[in-house]
Image 1 (cartoon, rainbow, N blue to C red):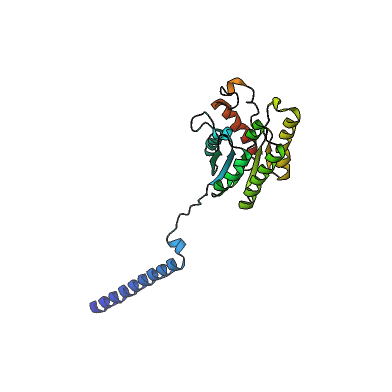
Image 2 (cartoon, rainbow, N blue to C red; image 1 turned 135 degrees about the horizontal axis):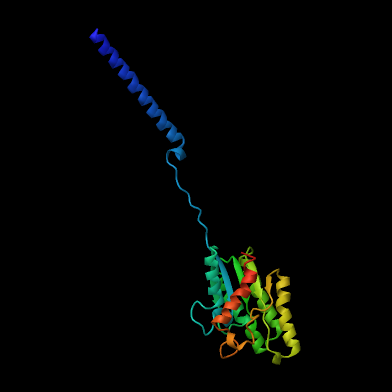
Length: 230
């Protein structure tokens, strides 16, 4: 009787162990069939930074100011505070004319551009360059950007010239920017220096280039148009 019970016990243990083994194999097979259930993997969405190119003169470069005080850098701080995935590139150069900009733009377009802000023409106006010549140069720059990055959003900033340039020249110069913006379907900021031009405390001793405080106003002027295209 004891032998029978022992034998029975051995048989029962064998059945239990076999059953456990089958269940373990079944779970392993199910894990292989559903790897996501077996080992959940955390996924991350990587947002790639998009470039905003500010292409212009000393007004964009921040002539006479400390690094970080020009309006493109100020706008970068705003973009960062809003956690927007954009990188502001300061492509300003003191003394830049539309003709020189036409030649320089190719080098800057080697990097991907999502938004293009064009601030050129002020030095042409101060030199009395014919409006039709400046118009042709600015259009050539716009065409190059469109050809290289057809999906890029574009903003054009307008400029004014001093009254001593003559009423007709001043009028033609002012209208040039508006017409270019309309022709190329660009977002248009009529006057970059609105709220700064002619105000001594907001300009450096030359009366032309904004102070650090003046640049803050330029940044706000540009932001009124930039925020709508981001």
